[in-house]
Length: 123
Image (cartoon, rainbow, N blue to C red):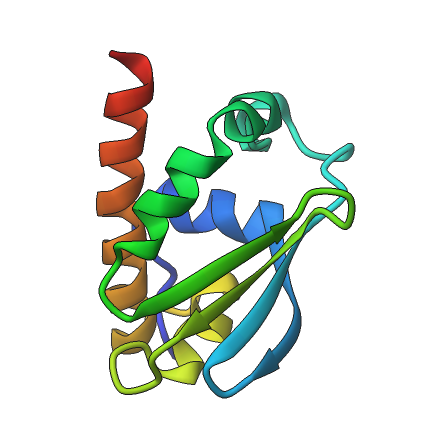
């Protein structure tokens, strides 16, 4: 049995996002209704929305991410990715908090980029 990730980042992501649709090389992620979550588990949607163009440019710089399209009204985004660099299973494993090598690679990339974005937005 796989262990859960030793980080809160994966847990917060899993609490905030679900896979709405997934085909090889393309995943639609949808924000979950977070009204039942504790404040510490919620995404800061106002900060994200205000800085969305910057955040999207930064996330598109992750190796393997081809493009990100956001639909604010639907509270979703489509991520197109290179399956040779990000295996399809990485998305489902990550959002189910399964500590697989594929999910770990994706998580490490997202965490690193998240730290860069957070540092830029708070400076």
